[in-house]
Length: 112
Image 1 (cartoon, one colour):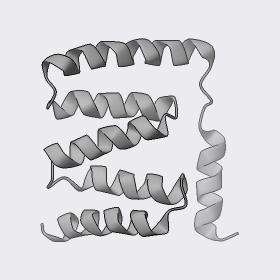
Image 2 (tube, helix red, strand yellow; image 1 turned 180 degrees about the vertical axis):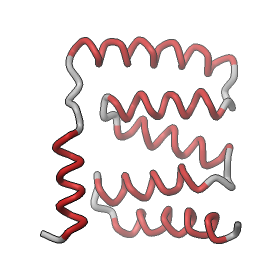
Image 3 (tube, helix red, strand yellow; image 1 turned 135 degrees about the vertical axis):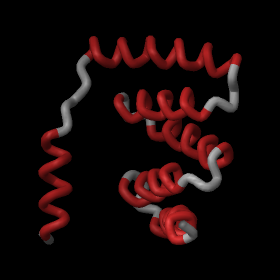
Image 4 (cartoon, helix red, strand yellow; image 1 turned 30 degrees about the vertical axis):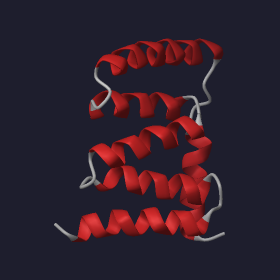
């Protein structure tokens, strides 16, 4: 196990596991955010908050949905592309798709 693998494993071990109460709070927050998003479907701040909620409850497909929407709304912001690359690599093991998103993130970073 390499040095970076050890750091990653250490971080994974320290992440808190959500309990029923915290999951319920997040689900309620998601419902509120979705209602707000209906009125403002292109509000990137609301979508970002939704994304963070889905991160908390490990809803991978919903995380991807939010990130793809953010990448459309904010095409010059590398964050969504970087997160998509991370998800495809670490959660799906899809190196090909991860590289596509990572290259998009790198192009944006390098253009500044």
